[in-house]
Structure formats: C-alpha cells, structure tokens
Image (cartoon, rainbow, N blue to C red; front, side):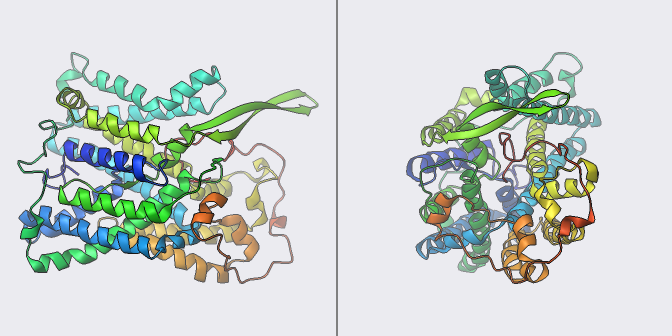
Length: 505
C-alpha cells in the first residue's frame, strides 16, 4: 500500500489505524473477540482508487478518500439503524468459502508482488535473498503450527510453539537477514519508517477535506457504497467466524451495534488519513481459538493387532473478555514510539511477503472447497465410511464446485477493480434462488450450511432462516456408485485447533 499509493499510507498510518480499531472495539463493541484492523482487501481498495484518481489529478486523492470514508460511514449507520445486518443469517458456506478462497488467493498474489518488486527495484541477488527469507519464513510458521496440532513433545510446549509461531519466526529471520558477511551485503528492502507519531507525508493528521470540489464529493458516493458493501460482508463474516459453533460461547453477539461502531471508526479514520479498519477474517477466529480451553483425552480402539490410542481434542470453554484485544491496541501504540520504530526498520519487507503466504495458504488449505477437491482426488478405498460427501454423487459435487470456483475465478479476475465484492455478495442470492433448483435438499444439506451456525449468534440476527430447497429427495442412494473401506481419511476437521487462516468449521 505504501508503494502503490504514492507513499501516502506508511507504517505510522497503518499502526495508528490498527491501534484505533483495537482500542475502540475492545472497549465499546458488543463482540470484542472480533479482531479489527487493516485487511488486504482495504489495501487493494486504497491503491485501486489511487490509480483511478491518478488519471485525473493525484493531488485530490487524500480529500477524495476522506469523502469516500464519510459516505461509507453514513451507509454504515443506515444499515445499522435499519437492522440490515440481519441478512447475514442468509450467508452460507457456499459464499463464505468462495470469499475465503478469494482472500487466500489475493494474499498469495500480494506476497508474490512484494517479492517481484525486489527484483525490479534492486539487484537480482537482493530479490533471491528476499525469496529465500519469505519462503523459509512461511515454512517456519507452518511447521510450528503443525507441531501445535501434533502429538510431539508435551502439550504445554506444543501450545507455546503454536501460539508464538509468529514471534519466533519473525525474530529468527529478521536476525538471519542481518548476519554479517554475504547475507548482510545483499541490501534487501526493509520497512520504511518516519518520525514517531507523525504522518508519512509532511502534512497534519486532519485532512482539509472541506476544500474538495462538490463534483468530486458526489463522485466519491458510489465508492463509499462499495466500501460499505466490502465491510458489510468482511466484518460481519469475521464476527460470525469468531463466534462459530465449535467455540462454546455463552455471551450473545451484537452485529447492528458493532456495524454502527465500525461506521464511527470509518469516519474517524477517514478524516485523519489512515487506512480504514474492519474485521480481520483470518485473525478473528484465531483470537477466539487462542482463548478457548481445550481438553485432550485418549480414545482406545481395540483391534486384532492390539490397542490403538487416538487423541480426541474437545473445547470446554472460551475465556470471553476484552482485555486481550485492549492490550493489543496498547502494544500497537507502543510500536509507534521512536525506539520501536527503529526496531521495525530492521525488518525486511520479505518477512511481510512470508506473512502473506502464511495467511493466504492457511485460508486456502482449511477451506471447504479444498476439502471437497481433495475428497474427489482421494483414492476411494481410503475414504472413511463416515464421510458425509459419500451421500452425494461425485458429479453433483463437481457441479457444486463449478459454481463456487466460477465465483472465485471471476472475483480474482476483477480483483484490481473495486467491484469484486459485488460478485461475492451476488453469490448469496445465487445460493438461495438458483442452487435449490439444481440440487436436492439432501445434497445441499451435505454440501452447504449456514455460516452463522451458533444459536447464540443466530438469536442476534433474527433467528435461523428457512432454507429454500425445492427439489425432493432422491429414491436411490447417491453413494451406491462406489464402495469404500473404513480407513483414516486425514486429520479431523473439528477436533484440531484452528490456526492461521482457518475461517471455516
């Protein structure tokens, strides 16, 4: 975003935005478990608008973004006043999985773009060094997360490695890039910084948005509406996944109030010229997961060869509080001080490319689309007989995936425009009006489900909606075309602790 917006949004703006969102939502929101900050999609939105304004007069960009935020805030407040967040109860895994896949692909693309810039702006050796750090950083985080899901070491040690995977990987690879000798001489790009608590550009924090011509104020209106659509889906899905069914929550949600509050932070962030924060899809459920108390028991399976012990992980409770989110905000404010900015300046930008890879791949690996694709590719005799997808004919699964991937491909194809979110939102009426005519109720019951599946959450969204399936049940069993043996089909979907990017059940 720093590179693609003429250096208007820098590290101080990003830190200020994250701190503002964390402090406001930890103290005032009804759903403080939902982590709020800067997403990859708002970064894409910001530099896409910059490219459009640059074709006319780039000096208009700061004021234009303020009015975009003002219009977006007004639309946020109208949505909250009219209780339109209730429509999020109609979101199913059909659209949320497509959205998760889209987000994962975008993160991977941004990671690659970051590395490509190292080759174009610097020496090829610097580019190869950046690729090395980014790929090994990804491998480090992935390995530490995998240890957390394994049976290696003691439970407390596994938990430490998994929960602190990012700090461990970041400290090691930042230090690696500064080892004296050939590695240090590569001169790879590091995070650019400015004065503590000052904007990146030589300007005041408050932007003189009142000086923008009236015609441009109204040009910003449709951009504000599209931004509201993006936040409507992204933020509310983040809140839903942070309160998914596998988390034993007791306190109810508050979607309308939180969306009104998001409008307030959108307005405030806009007039001071910082990126607009909203709910973070990968981080929100991971935050709830980190606050979940898990219990591991052993299940003994008796066979002719002897007893086999299998670990069973169950979630017993969630520590529902505001302190962790609040402390995140305080920590982010601390990083805006001079000494810590100097520390941030030592971080190679390749590390951030590695973060994009981790988050992007995490969203793809744990996605329901990936699960269905792997099921289709798996050798039939190794599919467990309890697999729900056995109830649906394979060609119907492929047909269902076709519709999902069509949405993903089209959205990624126009991801450099600001209309991508419109396609994601269009998948919701597609699911409710078209798919019931193409699939039976039983097939959709296996392939799809409501994203808001927690009774506590549904109560705050007006209750569980009636599914619109119109085709009758089939007489023959769709699973009769293949025979399957009882065998392990892979790691469980719900028993394992959620990690980076896991936004689905």
